[in-house]
Length: 469
Ligand code: MN
Ligand code: MN
Image 1: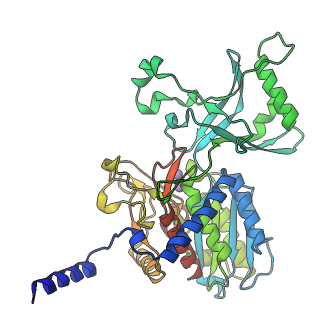
Image 2: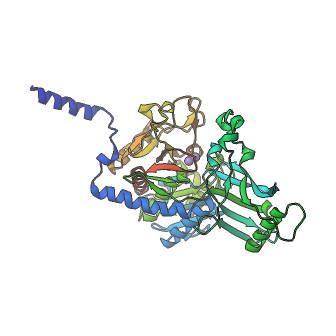
Image 3: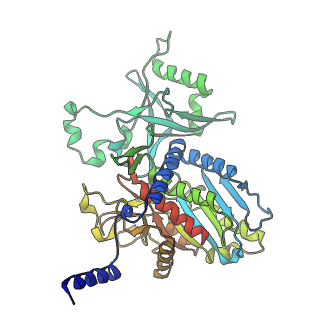
């Protein structure tokens, strides 16, 4: 054999025997690159409008209704091609497209979460100190607290007044709105603060939201700045201080999603975790026509605090929805769930060259290498993971390849570096074959996270292929 032929043969053999992990841009054509960038525009619009679980749920319902989905009522007669949804308390949404096959063949389930780390107002949040008015907060989800200071924050949520009326709040998103912020110490006087470890540089009780400074006119008594703020809130929303007790107000970053990089290949924004999976999953459901199997997509709340509560996936609301659909066909939910498959659509950590030490390079996700399949999560020896079977991982791998989805695999960091979980375990516990699949994220859980447009689009392709299968 000639030297060149030998080399080519070795190259071919490597291609055949080694795992290929090429950059996704080397594997798509110009048409698909355009689709990648177009999809990112839709996504940015979605995350700018839907910053909280309530806003994401109501935006999802709006899109579902615009695409022919009708609100499901228990006992409703269902047949192939029907598109239904259920709104769980305005914070989680379920949707289904009835398939041609019998429901007993199982459903194709996609599950993503629409809550993200943030600062929640406490039950009695408003106080005045040294003629400044502030809100006490209690952070929601796992955050590096110091990252949430000195950035513009907006306030979203609802207040249920004493008479039962619900008032919606969304302030700080419009260019003409004021915003709020958490202050931090100037470096000149931070000698003691800078000697603390990063978890304590800013403590939970330091995350106080600055909201005002003008005293109420004609008031010489104490707390007149607080009075002035309460008066503004009463005039604008009709609320009194006691109404905060029955409120859910969430401070989130006020900035909008923007392209990152000279090549505009990435998106910076708040709450990619997990709306960069929730939006592709929703979009796949919206675009799905006459599936073979019934497809069920759930956009859930409370993942970031452990999935407990009646809008989180540890509750029975998903199980009940599937049982209700099953009953419409004279089947039972248990049999349907046992035959079902699920993509737990959640993000993974992207390899960051600035912090390479936390990842093991052969087993982590990379920007632009596609949607990431995560067979198991957990920490301290896979604790808390559902660990998908080799058979199910194999099935999903074949499905992705058959549909030209660019995908990779990755674990969340090195063994013993830390870890984390998703809703996968709670769904797998219902006797459903489940695997995690989602977009790699840089700076996960920071107020400004980064994802790749290509990986985002591949998540959409993956979920669409799964529910159509
Ligand atoms: Mn997540
Ligand atoms: Mn998270």
